[in-house]
Amino acid sequence: MPLRYRRTYSWELLAWGVLPVMLGMLEGGVVGITAKKSFSGHVDADLLNLVIGLLTGLPAMANLTSFAWAAGAHGRNKIRFVVTLQIITVISIASVCLAAPTAWGFLLFAVSVAIGRIAWAGVVTIRTTIWAANYPRSDRGRVAGAFATMQALCLAGITFLTGMLLDENPDAYRWVFPLAAAVGGLGVFFYSRIRIRGHRRMLRLEREASRDSRQPRPSINPLGILGVLHRDRGFGAFMACLFLIGTGNIMVTAPLVIILDEQFKLDYVAAISILTSIPILMMPFSIPIWSRLLDRVHVVRFRAIHSWIFICSNMILFGSVLTTWLPGIWIASIIRGLGFGGGVLAWNLGHHDFAAPEHSSQYMGVHVTLTGIRGLLAPLLGISAYEILIAQGHPTGGGVFLVASLLGVLGATGFLLLGKRFASPPDQATGPTTTTQRKPPGA
Image (cartoon, rainbow, N blue to C red; front, side):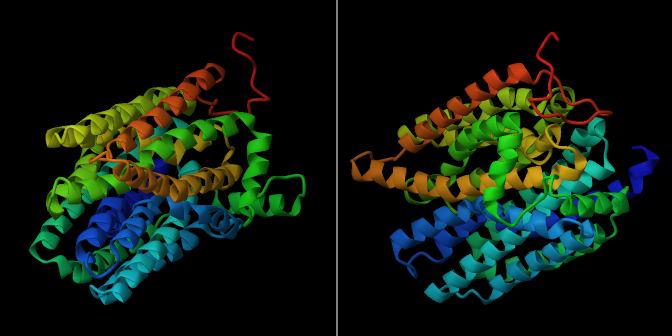
């Protein structure tokens, strides 16, 4: 690790070794299974399933607020801004201790989780700007991979332990969540020690851009994404393909929560392991491979290869649910986790192949806002498709996973076609360029 950013890297690595203890409480599998088992009987069954769909989609849905966070952080100290959001996350997770197993307690539980996820969406939006400033493009995949590996190992352990504790006592969430929040507070302290290279210059450029009407700048208006997508058509096409495959991936979680509980009758540990622990545990095995690929190719080419992992996983889920073959669901969970390893890298870093550092937050804002839109729509699509299939006499509802696979195929095909225009990563010296500025292949 070069000396020029070793100190920053060390503090950030420490932070990502502790913060996941808190973030594990916000994982879709943990939240969904906790809601299904701990509040079942206290809330109307149809309403409970609907809210579970929304809760499992929260990691993506909360990103609808990303433009507000990008605008709020524009021209302001990035570390202070991120730390403030992390503290809000700590408080919201700790407040779950007040959520008794009643209808009102379920409301408090859902609101607390939502606030935590919304605040964390701001952290995700702004931290990529910090990474762009502190780590060069040639090392960024490896650095983000190290953070993701540390986070994955911690998340896998804490989600599995949470499942064990909830199996022993379904009301244990009332002290597990605040205890995890307290540990997360230590990670907030570690993160506050990070420094940004060229921070003053970055803030000056952001403030100058705000005064220059010709410069694109973040806006709290989500419709601002249209301006970015119009100016950078290549990025817009990339986002469209990602929207398709992302919708397919998000829509399967809520139906799977219901299927594991109602059809397979799994306990907390098994269900949380399939939904969260196993996929996350698989990430460290695939992250080194995916990071080397991402360092060598443009993110469009990366996604053209990576997307088929999720298509394969969803097709296995389709066959396994249709035949009630439980081992197949475990296999699909493992494959999904291998895909997560590449997904976490491309999701956090991919927009840098289109954006200059001073516009990184804006591009990330577009990216996570679109993720939020599909996070809002996809769970509802998944639950609706599942209930329609059940109502029509399909006892398993497994067709949901076939629909997800078909959406994935459309997105992956788009990446393959778009990849012909993006043969290699942007040059480190000149930075990203839009497709209108790129030379055609062979020129």
